[in-house]
Length: 309
Image (cartoon, rainbow, N blue to C red; front, side, top):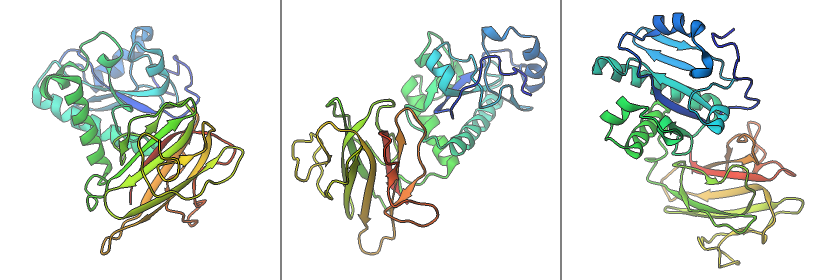
């Protein structure tokens, strides 16, 4: 059983992201300290899932449980939390702890299918009036955006993510919601297209090298004909996007033809509304448990990711 014994209750779903904290404790607040201190601490005053220290990493709470770590109900409910410890002490020690923390974040992202981006990797001060993570912000440019960009870049590196350099192939895509909202375009897995909890009605895709065609399946309906164009404003109903007015979609297929001499495929996935991502789909393949499309008939989707394999 964990040190915190599930006091903040079960999460009931997989985490969707990670908060990175700096503990701001004394320079001696290491693994041994937290292991002894947490059981005596009033946990309602706050605690994290992981404490990364010079003498080891302490998991104080199970991933399946929530933690009171960021002063924000949504963040506490849906995100894991990692404390980079000894932030008030020696800079070299702190940097080593931070590197270990980001490697841990990469491991957790892989485990739970989390794509590191500005929505999934969070800083405490984004949701609560605090300086945390004070030392990380200080050494990574002095702003939230610069610090987050550093964290995301390093986590991707530790995950072995090479999508930004794979032959320079970039998929650009955007979605339209059932309420008519057109969301900003996304490139590869720098982010996802969509909003958690909001049904997608249409998709538009293009690629900078090679050719791509795509189609979507309407919830309770059928597959729409293949499209090859890209119209961010969704004004060209013939070739600019795939969708059917404001009706939700539940699946998508994408076919990619790479330029001569480049052996790359398209990889994509979607998530059910307020649910987890389904498995990655490669093109329209039906091997290794793939269905030939991403999604699940009769279940609307709210997020889309496309990248290179």
